[in-house]
Image (cartoon, rainbow, N blue to C red):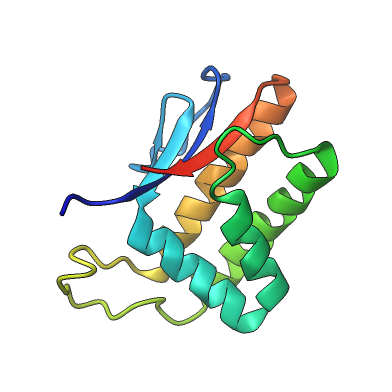
Length: 134
């Protein structure tokens, strides 16, 4: 079975000064699905409503978020990046069949910050924000 990916994308690539992150590319943030799921699981374990909402917005599949929902997502991404970065690892740091490339909390926080940066650029450029699993 091939690896699954969580994607967050915009129509075009709004100007980005970039983070130098491996997760950000031209108009998108792409991360291994198992890492996104570990993030969502941590959020859900602490704040179930936030975790369920993150799960919903990770598969928009063409549905549009209104402005209030975009700002809610930005707040959650910013808050949880800090919590995750300063907290314990989301996973065992030894590779397994399910998670061949475990990441430390700082890398999971970078993933969240990359999504937040993409969403901010998308809003500023008045473009469409989308997400799906591939």
